[in-house]
Image (cartoon, rainbow, N blue to C red; front, side, top):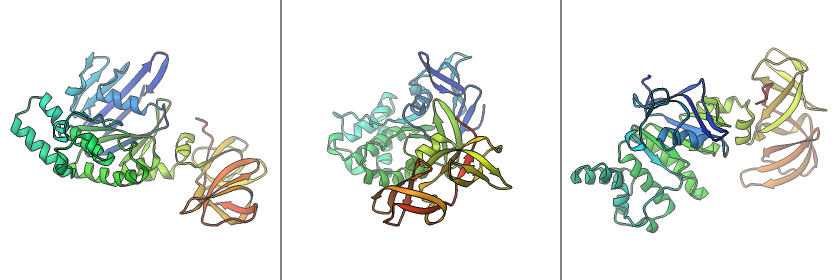
Length: 352
């Protein structure tokens, strides 16, 4: 056991022959008051992980402890239903009852628990006021905006005063402008209410904006866990690099120095920091941000293929040694062949 709000160990979930989640031999803890974000591409296992914790899927192995209470143990034949796990759950679709007013949607779980009418009224008013939807209690969901519906869904979950709040891409249905606003509001709300949360998303911006820690998952395996700054500073994983829209290139180690390596990408050499032990002549992968390419000077020669103005910057697609890379720059390039250098990149010999 541990003092964390959530402790998960050796969790495995299969759907037929497909292993959707594989934590065999691994454990994970989420601390009190923490917003723990699980990020990964579609089909990576992130929602399966959330549903196992919620009790909506039954794992094939492992154990889950919430608030010091064992809610699932394969070896001990323990599997508590969702309503006995002290969790709040906010689904992607919000799942509001269209025929019920906001008041009744929020109060629904409390009524199921047969709480006294006075306590239900006090809790509903309190949570509605904290989420600034107290003026909407007499409306139906179809009379609300997307942002308002999202707040009602959150209110319905936190009114139960759960030990753990689970959020499955709850703002993905909002338009872009509302999503930016919701990220700020959602983090402030969860932190002010001091609710321990697990937040699932495929959006790296959401993960960085919301998470105290981030876990990267792919093919059912947790590949990295760290703070947003730790995750961003150690991009040596192709899945993470893809989510961040980093450039990924294969090459071969041409030279090893005290604090850097040179990687031959086929006609051009790029200096990088090394994320693991590398040997001269070995194959490697390099990762670098589109923002780390400086155009105008340097030893690299790029052939510009396309230029797209995106408002805050130009997105340039360019070719180097027969390989395509993405560049973000404030310069509108007129020439098709330019000099460039890469300010920062990471080299790894780990092919995963």
